[in-house]
Image 1 (cartoon, rainbow, N blue to C red):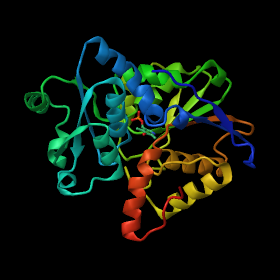
Image 2: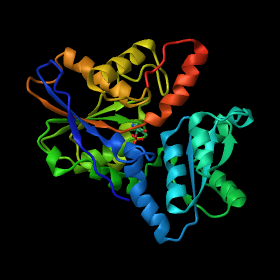
Image 3: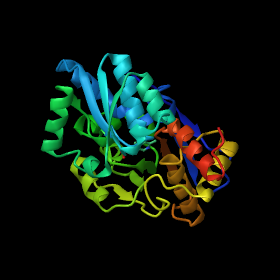
Length: 300
Ligand SMILES: *Cc1c(COP(=O)(O)O)cnc(C)c1O
């Protein structure tokens, strides 16, 4: 697996800081942004040990589920998705993410939220092995040592002159890779897409440097929670800079960055690199839900 990326200046932004977006969302048409980075060495490893199937976990709109399903199709693995929410299996029409994953050949098991919480327990994994046979196990969100190794490749020498590097945080694998690849003079800022104090410790498990901080005020109420002001921001951002953002991760992060700029958080003339981790496949599913609720939609 190989990827190239490029940096895009937000030169129209009329502020005292300099913002550049790293378009990781464009490195692959289907394996989006950081999910590509996280899968790269895991796919190599799975091939090396001659695994024939991969099993992983995710929610109904999971970028990781979509990425694994496509990787399975592209690299010749069977894929199994353990999906959070029994009710999803009963619905006749799968949502766009699951429909895509199914078309790539992924098999699903829909589990209750209680069972889903057991996803790291040995008993639960043993049950899955009895049902599906042996498999290469990818944790939820795809975060493990090899994923962090892949994410280190997000940062290249051309990025060393930035003062700040910002990224969205789910399980913490991506920011860990960025931290490990960064220069000590750089400050890495993570914007969690969810509530929870466990992230700090999770990142410490993988990160080899201390030059980072979590900015916790921009999760909009929790994982997958979306407010009209967030949608308005995402639509405005796309209109102004021609860069689409997803509502679960990158939209919340950029909302936070713009808010921090307004509050003079960054010293004058700071050079800020923003990592666009992708996730755009999730917009269709979120829009379908917003439409049912009669709210404003994300512009495509
Ligand atoms: C999964 C995901 C993240 C979070 O990555 P972690 O490594 O789990 O912290 C951020 N942005 C997007 C678009 C994602 O899909």
